[in-house]
Image (cartoon, rainbow, N blue to C red; front, side, top):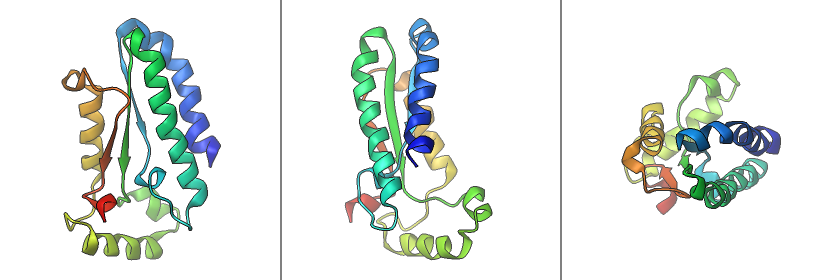
Amino acid sequence: MMNLNLNSVVALTQLAVPHLEKVKGAIVNISSILGQRPNQYFMPYCVAKAAVDMFSKSIAIELGPKGVRVNCVSPTAIRTNFQQASGAGEALEGVLKHLEETIPLRRIATVEDVTNAVLFLASDKSSFITGSNIVVDGGNSLI
């Protein structure tokens, strides 16, 4: 879980930094609300995503003076083809139905909801934002 969710982010950052310094680029890491909210059934995933959150904040401090911004997007569960292909179909549908009924916005996040946040953080419209984590969860983390 750490290799997939943290070590890959660290390795890719190390590879991208020389170019990003030249172009004053931006990094947007994908985390999860489970990096901020423990869950007994997904403990290794929660730990890995919490590490992505802290890595993003820490590297934002290091790269900021070099003109590189680093931020995170932390979505809640969303419906994707990957989850269906992994065999999580029926169990996942139960989780998504529960979320749809309980989160304040009363709907499931879409891929577009997450990509819109990523596009914003990667754009010049967020030129003074670094070390931040945008939670895309319809208010799920509020309850």
